[in-house]
Image (cartoon, rainbow, N blue to C red; front, side, top):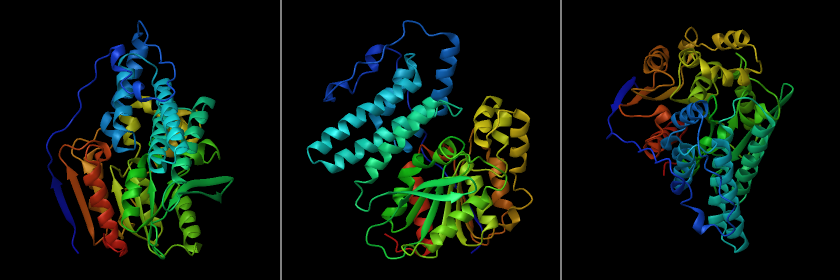
Length: 405
């Protein structure tokens, strides 16, 4: 098959910003079985706090919140609270606790499906709350533990239970979730990765689309990400692909799975996916969603983001962080990418520019490669989640020979 580049044009979409009034913040409270005291709307917001909240609103727009697992009303309320000047972290945690109460109420009455959905929404709330904390503080870890616990409570109610997965690596553990399609014998496996700060659970909906089609998923945190970093102190290094090869080693020994492997990386995870596919021939299909050939391009354009980069690489020294990031550049090695390649990108991506995404596509030596460009897309195509998930999961079915559904 020859290379293919397609441009996808969709109608413009967006969301209006909610008014910053106290009455806009509590739309969900009347249905709460045990309502908690509402958070206080500040009488005044300092310029610094307003700038911080506005930055978070830009980094986590409604399209991203909803695409990556938040319930619509929760996403609206979080944005409304932040617009009113309420602390983002407190607002996200408040919404997460509310979902846990709803989940437990449903479970006490035997409503497992409802309970599962509320546990999963709680996990999303805690995840987006901790996202506002760049360094690995105790508050971030506490919220992340609640996120993991909620996600596990939801996974235990799945038809084929979602399993927590850990494997020793270097001086810590690589951590993830295994999701398996019910009734499938030896299914192919796709490793799904998140980015700089949107880690594994943020891509649950994408993983679920694969499981629906008979493909098993390892939803995982690489070194520098999520649970792997926060609780096992494994940090990002230039040889991150070795960690992914270790994952494949363990999956290959698990008799529940077949010997067909793919990888789907989102944002910075797209770079990790491409780097791994170059290094490990066992990966026969690679999807890069919103990725890049050189991740340093983003913090170079937005230097304030370096604090999150420093946390990923495990240093507070800006020079050391830059040195590590400079080595994360596959410009010279991407010709070694020969497996099937699917690349998704937005024409106006503000994180990783289309120009660098095209270089990855152009330089890859895959005989079977496709680049899809959304003219109105958000970063990682957050504003077209269903279309994105269908395109990618169907593609993996074809490339890994799963039974298409």
